Length: 211
Image (cartoon, rainbow, N blue to C red):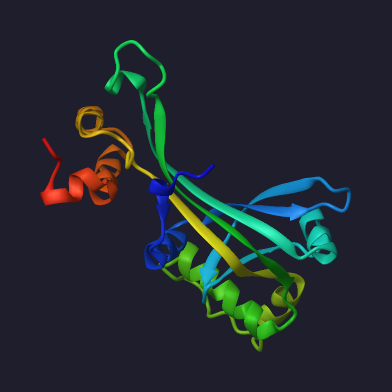
């Protein structure tokens, strides 16, 4: 069961997260009834998800059979060891993260203009420094490549976001975890503390942690 305190209802914040991330897991339905998961790059553009690949492949076969798909994106910020809050028990060990789960319908695009637009969005995201000619379906150098590349649009029907950053912690545990993260100071530990400060209700109250 999803904990309500971890649910994020801010659509703009969730869309920003999708813009920042470039890798997710696509779930399709195999004709044999088994779900099939495929890790791939994606771009979020005009409130839809796009990915590309070869024309052949099992995920493309699955989509042609059943357009219903799921898509998951997640980013782990920090592993929080149990000894940050309890010197004896393993139970407090956890991880802080952001995740988005999408249900939608996938459509293999045939319109070259939309395919070019989606591929251009990919390039802006993955190669923002440029260094290439604009992707134009009427450019002979691109026309054949666009035709031979399969581009899929996922129309989003349901979107839910879960951000876990200690929102359910008591103030005393919150203080111990933030202190532990700042002392460890590795990877995304400082970013994790910033997210805790932004999301934890007992920190936001009166501008800081309650006594």
